[in-house]
Amino acid sequence: MFFRIKMVMLALAGVNAWIFHRAEPSPSAARAAGAVSLFLWASIVVAGRMIAYNWFDPPGVH
Amino acid sequence: MLPFFEWCEATSIGAAIRESLWLFPVIESFHLLALALIGGMVLLVDLRLLGWGLRSRPSSELAREAEPWLVGGLAVMIVSGFLLFTSESIKCYYSPAFWTKMTALVPALVFTFTLRRKAAMRGEDALRPVWRRLAAAVSLSLWTIVGASGRWIGFSG
Image (cartoon, rainbow over all chains, first blue to last red; front, side, top):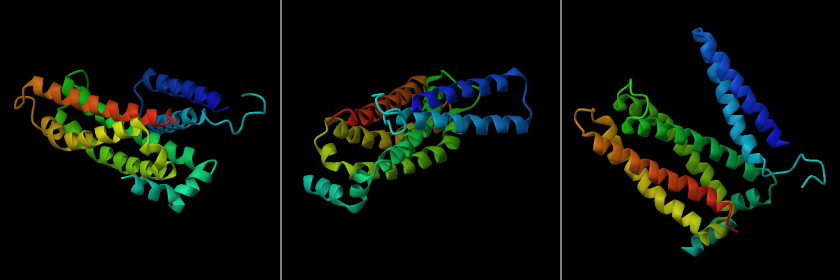
């Protein structure tokens, strides 16, 4: 469960960086990209740690 | 020192974290986010001192701007780390990884806020590159030991 969340966030972080580097962003777009990036990377760290916990997995997965 | 560890383990905070299903991972997440922040701030200045990155700005400027974030990260780190510690103090007492981490943490902190800060604040002309590089290498080595042995506490016992 957390592994999947982490992978989705990781892909979104890649998309965010790609959009940011495609063209010279306006100051407000750059701020938005920064906020999104911080949120995504923080989520990746937390979800990554939570992979060790199987609270939300259906029974029998582990 | 064992009585102090036993006392920590017996506190109501330690017991609450130990008995909760989610408190430990949540506090640990804050610990990791602060780790990422500290790692970023340390790398920023050390890579500059090594001459490998961010060369368009002087190291003194980077160090000055990174320091409040570094101190903030350390504050979160120490508070969350102490909370985690109270939930498993006895385990830590018998964990070589824990003692390695604490033994490396002291020189890492002292070095960062004394010699490394001086090395970064002095201009590139005032300090020979070899000393700048040495400061960065010592800093990176110490913080790597702290991080790696910290992770290792979780693998023991």
